[in-house]
Length: 440
Ligand code: SF4
Ligand code: SF4
Image 1: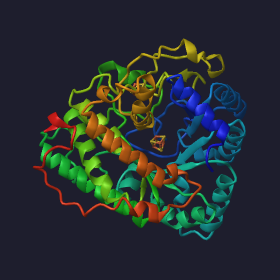
Image 2: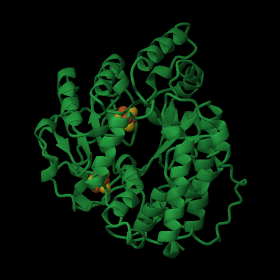
Image 3: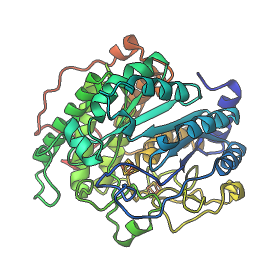
């Protein structure tokens, strides 16, 4: 389903006013039934739990729609503990004119796939979700090795259950996305060096290339057609970690990386993506990886500021307040229905983390916003601009071939085939990608 002409008009009107189409991540609940080592909401953590009321969320949605928000994500905790509520609220958001509606799961319901009621359970869930305007339904996966993922999450058997459930969802026209939370176990145990091991750039990059290669292969083999990567949710900025309102953050070694390690990790992902673009719809924009790599190398400060707190926001379940994002917990903006967008400082520059939900679209939108600001000089304001713009344009062409990742449409394999790349021949000595001068 494409945006209506009226929605298109609204997005362009925002862009002309130098604002990106709005995005809000709503933490529907802090309840969770998984045990992820990297997350403060794990079930074994004795923290108070809250869930928003449907009335609260309806009021939030009305306020978002009034403010021209284009996209809403229902996150948790585990949103699928409330699958019917999420489907109902998605219908409400769709009716209010919000075009992009997303939610996901840790996949707990895919356990016990050998029980006789498994198929019935999956059909019921798929029916509930398909009967809503959801256009992203993600399943979190941490590792290419099922046992490693399941052990970390405390969800034995979920990968095999996911494999069995995928065709049931597809039959109902809902194409599941795999959401990789990048960590040191992405490729399985012993592939990526542990935190604290002396850094060897070539070795580290190669290890992550292997990890991503294994991961994309697994996703394709599971029959999943859409995939995204969440960059590690750790902050190494002293006390600011304690301010995060979104507890899916951690200082755990599993997801804690030095800037050099992050640059190498982004580089590996940048290298591997082209080899899977002809068979998977991979959301991760290579232009954003380029920007984040350069930033980890200390380059381009302020060139790709995050739209968090300007056009993108996070609603915290505990106090129902709006924050610039899940990290900036010291900056409550009050209630969504009281939020005056025109009073926000649009020149604020934040690049404190790599939260892909906000950073990827911020980079993607930046050339458009620059162009609107000044069509004659916008190129020169982008780093390594020729190469960056080449990668960015290629991302947009690919996004179009992916049908903009709408989970309600099947992949167009003919379109994707245009992006077929030669098989990978890694050369750790090769020059850094164009526009990445000082990484090497
Ligand atoms: S990462 Fe997600 S699934 Fe895991 S404990 Fe946190 S909220 Fe639950
Ligand atoms: S860069 Fe990170 S901390 Fe800053 S606004 Fe964006 S998501 Fe928040």
